[in-house]
Length: 421
Image 1 (cartoon, rainbow, N blue to C red):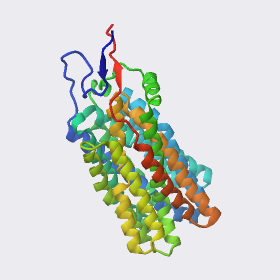
Image 2 (image 1 turned 180 degrees about the horizontal axis):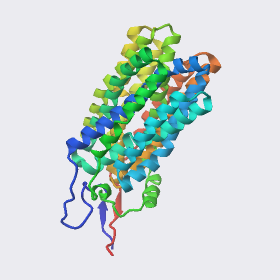
Image 3 (image 1 turned 180 degrees about the vertical axis):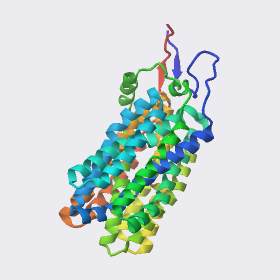
Image 4 (image 1 turned 90 degrees about the horizontal axis):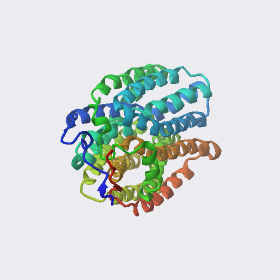
């Protein structure tokens, strides 16, 4: 009769009996991982600042720009499971190197694109592929394998907070670059900054044992996928994450143009995006810390419900610079705070052996939502001359996501113990 064992073994459980495989220090993982996410997410969060200068200079519609950003998010999502599987199998270090090169190349070609098709290929496909290899799924895989489970959710919160700090740091930098050097040169400078990901990747080069540790080391990739997609909590988390992508990418890309349409100067949009990034540092850190103490599904349900409330208040209240700043601060607290509890739940339920790949599939749903959010924002604006319909769609989706996360079961999957040869 086979025995039953939980999957979520501590990092380092794989290997010869009695052997204690070497691990990277938590400080090294957090410093290098946070720096990579600061660069990759920081540059990305400023893309909305390029919407008007590029479309006006090239003579494109907003939908042209928005569709390229939508393709970027979809490419990021589709490539995420592949990048995650490669990181799980061969180590995050190699994936980060490739992603850093693609990031710089995509930004250069984005600056050189003179047609909508070329812009979609560079700003859309190439940058989407780059982000799949330089953001959360890959970094969180290293955290899952190298950080003790007792501090895993907290460590993920720290890394997500770094991505938020990147937005706070990079948005004013990108605004200044566009204003002082022009949008074309600004993109080339950002490409040079993206190359800093390459040396940071070496700090996340895991010991040989670490890349395969995690309690289910003998589970095949196919078995892991079949298990996850037949497990209702995984499907619920995946559905909820769709809403996160729709909301944040619509707001991040279209907020600057929405405010300009309402008569506000570019400095209001810049401050708004900075406030989102600044307050998200606190929001993601709090979500990661609370994830060690409270049920993560309740944290997620609260985040989505509060987003619906905040967006409703923003749409209904008289619009002023003050209301924009209050909205941005409130949304900042809720912006990426879904990331630590969602990824920590994946590790908690399924273990860390295939964490980057499974996280990539959850993130694919997020990016499908991102695709629809950013594209519908441009499409419905061009059709109606207003963003109002999309604002109300984000409210309805927030309520739906709140309800979707409540039934999630957080207990680790129990599998029959694998028989030795």
